[in-house]
Image 1: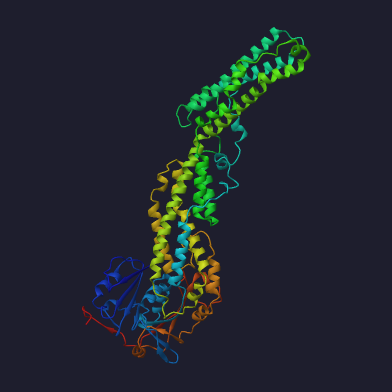
Image 2: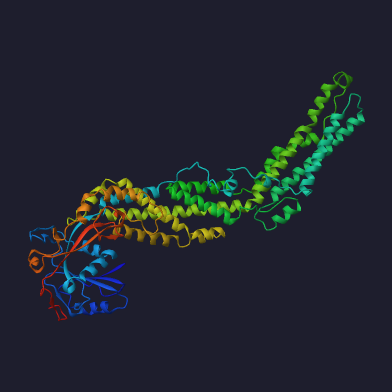
Length: 611
């Protein structure tokens, strides 16, 4: 990093290994104390001074072998061929900001300092031939708006199932997969509920066998005994149904005594392996990370998470009480408690024996009773699995999914609001400077769609980092803590990304970036196909360039030049000349020319007021 210290506006407030001092020639002497403070600091490794204005008069602090000064006689500059001496009017706009921006790149800063060490007196006039890679403000503003709309869009329905192909917990907990067979085996053998079930089953089976054994010559006492068997079976079925209803009504999986009550009733209660809090969060994280890596819509992901939260939330076993009555209605129990009599009369008793027995079998309702019994047990086992055994896991899944959804929704709102602000700020910016070749900038104008995808991809990569601190909290069920510090993290990253876009451009992946996101395609289409980039990098130091001085200052310059060639790292490998400095910035590519001053040009100014 290069610390820029503008002595025209501020005092020495912060220092670093590299310090770029900006001042004008009239204030150099007055700023000698500040310069001395910078030069003598142990924090500082290299100092480069940019002096703007006529008559380069340097204070004693800049004498000696450590002097590294760029003299800018006129920041608007003049077109000058150092080999032939030909000159022409340059642009009428100042290039000071571009020079400062260029020298703020550590790679360029170090190379310029090194080259000045080879130049007599360490002082030179800068000039350049540069191709700009800065995105037009209007294009960037539109890209920011488009991406903001993607983040701010309404929730979108996503019919897809939640959970990766390797997920085992989420499909079961959300109901999108069948409950495992081992979970449905919920009754402890010979436990209370198992005994009640077997008692009712055996009673119904006994009554059924007695009915099957009913013969043509069966007497009234035999038929009466069969009726008693039916009544006993009805009582056993009613007892089992009532026991199931009481369990459903009384058990809440969140109660501390629920495990003990279930154990006393012979119902298994233990969270199965692979469905603990850590495993659930791991599967949630894998699915969210996959969605972000695949560049899916965040609002669609929010909808999926909310749907998962709704699907996985336990509704409580009490909600299944009405289901007991539907499976085993009171009418059925009434028929069992007061069974119909065998048809009376000799005709029904002897001539129509088979039809009478079939009619009586239907009236006794033993078949529907056995179906009701099995359905009650099946309901009990499914409720025991889904609401009791998996109740805590389902609740954790629901709360965790809802927390992540709320976190992502908050991120979307903050990102979209920030991007809208960026868009408004860009809309008021000036276009590319006339001092630069705009070919790459022009090429970027036609790549708005790719630019939008790159920015979207970068921000989705950032989302992964924003969520990172919250996952451990979710594993422990600390749902509020999962969002602690989120706003600050998002704001800090967005500020870093804004700085990145301004100083490095979209061609360079940000520090938090994890994927290419179409960036290489954009680089290939914009930078690698630019002939102006090649020409700027191969420009001869003595050829025509924009020299940052006035026409009268040319007489103070020697007819020799040193060159610092630079380009973004993203365009490396294009057959460029040796010695190119590869920068992290994606804003500029070209040649910076350093022209030494004639001997005796630089005057020493010993006064403290700049006079």
